[in-house]
Amino acid sequence: MRAKTLKPLDAAWLYVDTADTPMQVGCLAIFSLPPDAPDSFLRELFAHLRSVERFAPPFNLKLAAPRLKAVMPAWVEAPRIDLDYHLRHSALPAPGGERELGVLISRLHSHPMDFNRPLWEVHVIEGLENDRFALYMKMHHSLVDGVGGMRMLQRMLSPDPAEENLPPPWAVGSGARRERTSGPRGFDAQLRKLAETARQQAQIAPAVARALGRVVRESVRRTDYQEALPFDGPRSVLNAKVSAQRRFATQHYDLERVRKIAAAAEVTVNDIFLGICATALRRYLLEINALPDRSLTAGVPVSVRPADDQNAGNAISFIIANLNTTVADPLERLRAIHHSTAMAKEHLQALPKAGIDSYTMIFMAPFILQLLAGLGGRLRPMFNVTISNVPGPKNSLYFNGARMEQIYPVSLLSHGQALNITSVSYDGQFNIGFTGCRDALPSMQRLAVYTGEALDELEQVLGLVPAKAGGRKKTGTRKAA
Image 1 (cartoon, one colour):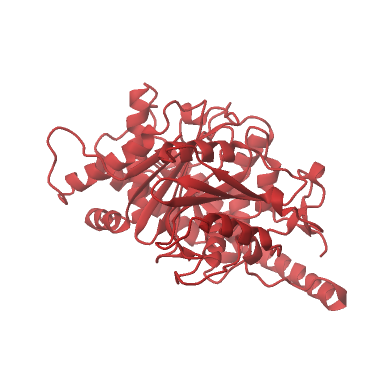
Image 2 (cartoon, rainbow, N blue to C red):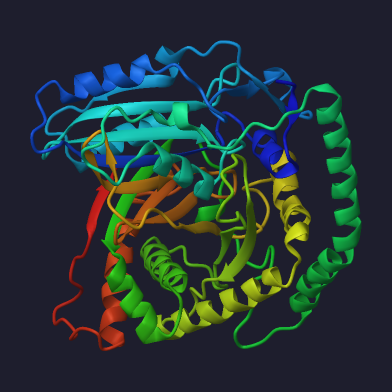
């Protein structure tokens, strides 16, 4: 395999990777043991995983020149992969509850990756209470985005609980067919592809320019319901420089419940997600006397990956949402968020598909340049917090007979971005992972509790449940460390 130069958006995650800001993303999947599982089930499962030394893309890729990762990085196929390094087996201390699991995931996700090896790790974690175990997988963001990672996970699972000897994720990979790049025909094909790309870029340049011009025009035209703009949010405690250590918390809700609230409010499920995050952030910042006078904004990744695209790498763009954290009324805040996201999506959807990558790179360039210049956390942020919603499997899935009970995203942070909130849907659940900087955000796990109480509040103000006397009811479950 010849060296393959990374796309600009993939390469950007390598450019900004530092000891304090490792650009890795992960997922935490929790499984229940099969009802008839022998005591040796996990030992045999780990032995099965360890026996499979087939590596599919992107698990078989490594950097061609690790020391030059910030200068035209390229992937090459690793000639040898040490599976014992990439596959780890851990056990939680008693009682194996939410706290113990959260402490371990926080520590594992804080640890940087070895750029001399393929950039992934898989951890099998036993010792969870109630006959459960967990699978934590992390991979560098230059290799995969949230939607791509979710599709890879789905391919290693089965809807059939009786199916056995399923391959591990590294043997399944992205599932994409390898392109032929050697020989005269392959070389000619590459030349034709380059020529076609150049032609497309020339055609879409005017549309990209118009979209960027629209952003500039909005910056001087203000309305009651404002579209959030780059660098429009205030400086806040969420936008400090970060340390290397992470804190991780989770929360999950019934997806149908969230959909009913969205229908009653005449907004989208993603608007509800942004709304409860905004309410939780407003409450948290008020408690620590740090709520800015201007509204916080959220950078919201938007997948532009076609339904049949199984390739690795990133296929995302961004919109910026106004969280309206200066608005006290939760329903008014939600409707203002809906208006903000609707305008941002309308601008993005007006672009030709071929122009989205160019638009995204130009749009995000100030953010990347700020990090490269070491100014992240020192200047006003491009947006205050990243909030992402990733669609996941709709039905129950199994791995060698073990049912996946929940799945949580574990995300990345950068200087100036001390908090990331990402959700993933699965089998009627709406699961949220909160990744924060341990030093910048004291008691960050309170945000997980507050989102649940914000959901309760919306149900009450929309008349879906009777108002509770004596304060908020507790909802959902939480893990934190």
